[in-house]
Length: 242
Image (cartoon, rainbow, N blue to C red):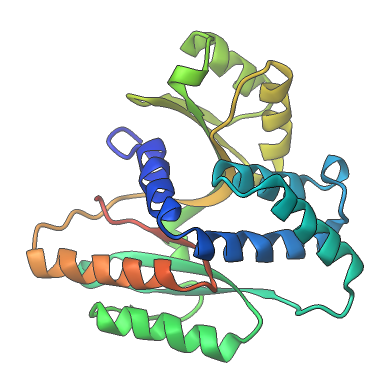
């Protein structure tokens, strides 16, 4: 993962999120609603909800807003139902892109995602057309400045808890797990009072694609920017070597 600092990307995204809190709060509100409906309103017994709450706090969502969202989802059985949908396609130079969305209107979301690809000279593909180029993994990021442990000690805690891989970046540590082991590893870190910047199930590219063509770079950035602006889009994974 050298040269592909997830932590740097998180910081970059957070800066963008700070300038568009309305969008990120909308996304997080939907995730809270889905997590509560699937596993109940108690984060102690609902790991997915606990993860969403942690993400919400990392994005400076007020505690009372989080609590209102949980109470609303728990008490409103007739509220809007959201469903997860995934789109796969190609950007310029064959760059693989996966889009995860959470929507109450699949037709609207499909049209918006297709438009984003088209405007950036990309194309939507069939399910599975690019996902084989990624590995579904649990990924935990730890800020070096927030961690008092030596890298070797942190690595042993993670591996003993079931992690598959550990790497050290310039400003962070990255722990990779099987998706089913993510909760166990995160709990082990929590027990050792280790602060986690990000913990999520993600899609990690097996290989990255470089691009030097200025037009291609503008087009892939256009696709990513348009997807980022769409309230239905929860996450975008790609193998562009930025």
